[in-house]
Length: 479
Image (cartoon, rainbow, N blue to C red):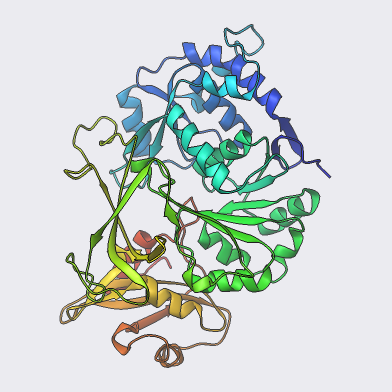
């Protein structure tokens, strides 16, 4: 059993934070001398080496790009043409001066972090779409936000978080930083259910940091959460946690707390945070994405609650506002790297495309993506609402609802469903009649074994839409 010391655990390998800081400081001398006029790209598959390289670059005052291992060739070529140097292609260069003396001296964690003067560049879109864009954020600002997150999430030096790799190295980075700040340890493992359970048995994991989609996957294994004997909290971000999944989690582990971190890369993330709430005592139908966080300005662009149009509309059920979430922060770059065109409106707000209700207590409840609304015969259907209704059906493990173009109705709702039971289209549609209005019931229900996912664990809606377009045109689909 690995003791809960402060440090980083990868499988059975442990690296203390003190050793981590010393190693990062040593290789920072090499990172400072590596070519790359526009910055250094880190694409290392090993999470510990990945973080060592990132912090070495930050200590050297460099611009560092955090990339997924599977980044597309088009993006790689674009970055190389810009003058970005890929460390992963010449890994020995960071080791050449590792054993030499360095110019960085630190007395502890605080002074180490203070000397991380570089900037971080995060990707904001798909790797092969040709639209990959990067946001550059000072590490100083991210540290400030991370300290806030760590406090709200109630992390302490006795905690141990687990995060899954290589699903999302950016999530690994955030998880590491908020635990590092609090002298808590981090376990990193590949996304393999049995491997995760084995690590949970050997360590005293107190926090799971992941997405709602991944939690839904864990709940398919009846005994999965039994392996986390000392679990205190589940921290979600990246996609929407629906009330049905939360109810299922509460039924399995009413003794743990749930927290949510919502934000977008353009506004440096963590704009809305839900503090930990005990699942056994909360109303899972009313646990939303949280409350506006410090350093963030949040407002709602009003929409009609029934039709989804951009105009002031009716609100009900305790809602005081309904519409698109607009975010701004004390540090918002305003434009993507190498692009002077602003993505903010005239009041310096970023339009997220996410729809939410604001409740009387000031909390936000996620209602769906603007793009997930389906315009059927002049009426708006929330794909998120239909997915939630589908997940309440017995044996339905997950669902994704999209809009398909239609000559008469404009769009029709189509559902892709994973089910462990014996369902057919007629039975599902009949079951939905007691849960949603008749016009919202999908016109076609397609049963699949799995839903495609992005590297961060979210359902890949874009791929599903493309496959559905092929299917409707008579072309063989991949799912």
